[in-house]
Length: 153
Image (cartoon, rainbow, N blue to C red; front, top):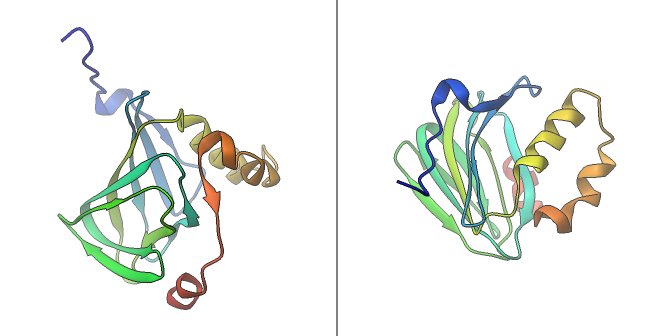
């Protein structure tokens, strides 16, 4: 158990600035980054983007999640699992009429907790939104345009 990581629910950092979502930070290691995010009815999660180094895993704990996967828009339900490989554009948000509770895992990890904290500061008006775009290389989070996602949302 020397290298084991245990994160107790009452000790996990939760980011709550977005009134439509809560992001609970779980692990930010070299091997992986993980968080649990809850999205309220129809709310957006992340806009279209891709990662150059990390695969992103989605496990829907409860509710319904709408996901952009390249140019297709899919609906994931409770118990569904998705792996998005590097360089594949994706986006996500709760489906209209439903909340979504999702476990996310990135592998390898890239020190992504500071990215989530930046988003939280922007929501609170404590950071400039331009900092998000400026951080794309640092956090391996590269934004793209998606007509398919715009049409679906």
